[in-house]
Length: 144
Image (cartoon, rainbow, N blue to C red):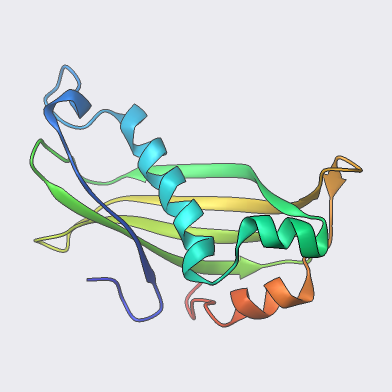
């Protein structure tokens, strides 16, 4: 289901307790799914977050997240979250994730996540380690 320039990050199912008063998955439930998928993104790239901290003294923090809700999901719907790298900066990157219906291929939501490299000792943004940049560039989506 994921397009060639996107990695499959997470699979899930919508349960009745995800519903709101309108009978579809409430917006509050999209965030945990997308957040979990973003952690899997680093693993899929072979970027162990603990090792990055030990080797480079930095980790990522989420600076901005934008969710676009395109189509409703209902109980029993199966979905896949896929994603890739949309932009690479000096101290940050943007990931583009999608929640896609596993059976129909319809895109139900998108999630743009800006991640900033962060030095916990100085409590400031930090330059992206070159080894990390190389891994990210290998998965940069052509259309951003």
